[in-house]
Image (cartoon, rainbow, N blue to C red; front, side):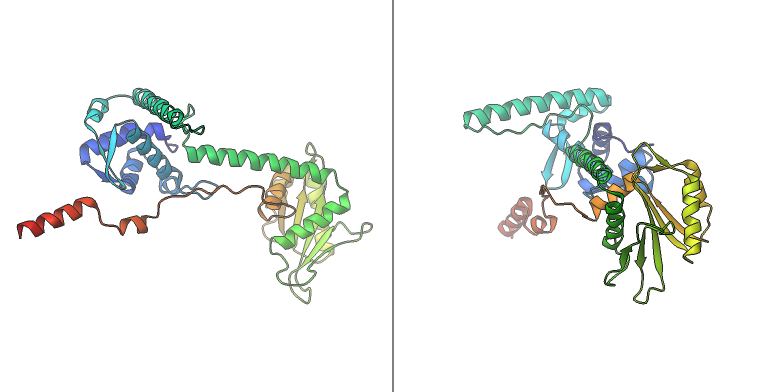
Length: 325
């Protein structure tokens, strides 16, 4: 069972609130997860951006749309309950509920537009549901991922436009940026262009150079594939260098035979294969030759701050007690 979309969660929320009464937002997570048969790892699954867990985010947006369409309401912050009209939707399908919510949200957006025009404001916001049933957070994440993938392509294309020696220097710098070599000055070196013995770069792991990581860098077109024979030759070069640590990096990909061979070494030689996509991701993540283009700041309410304020109903009850005393 995959994690349900937010629109698929809405009927379950209405039925649960009808049966159990008002509930805190986060208290809905476990019972709804049980209804959908989700495993612990699915409940804990986070967005790649790190902006919260997927399932809880979808519950949040389902509640938001239900509330904005009048099917649920918030008696106080973070607490939800059904409205009277919700009772007529308890037996309706996901599609029927979504159609109603879409209609209400479209009406809400139209009213917002009218108010914006009357106030002379050009900007406006729309709460109409997306057709692919993604939450705004998911749409933002998808856009971010699309930009990342596009940048990955640009990174590889740029590398392919440079010389092989520049690529060798780049991968050595990347290994250092990733933390290999520690605080050792000039830990990484590029070997001489000729008679390199099948080794393109070396990273010293300690001051005396007793521990070393050897690198093979292949600047291949994206359509090319590194085969088993080339990986075997690199392992042979590691043996000649009396090293059991190697990293093979390419701008293309590896054949199934090459990958199987690397996995069959069983620790006799620690060999890591990095393909073009992984290489671009490391360059991006470790900020090698990259610069930040734009920051998008998204805020949420600080629960500790707002929960520290006295609720209105508590104050009324306190005053009532004082008057009857």
